[in-house]
Image (cartoon, rainbow, N blue to C red):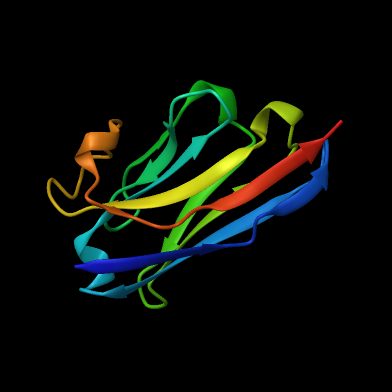
Length: 126
């Protein structure tokens, strides 16, 4: 199993940047595909980006393409989400999640991920 802890959320003005981190402990970090999900009030949780075990494959939902960048450092057991040009509609609770099978493919569904962090709040003011 793996335990996930997100950090780096906060309040930022529109157009600003934040970098989220998700630190993993437990099983070997490179045994997991990692994803960042977000959930805004009244909305379903959605995958916004994910990265395969070695970074060879990534996925971005259209709404964050060109603004957000996912990366991972397997030596530090950490996945990052660099968020630039933030918009008020990016306001949400952000979760990292881990998938421990089919490691070369980023899953796009919640049910594919077995391990979740507690979430970190990102609020973008206009």
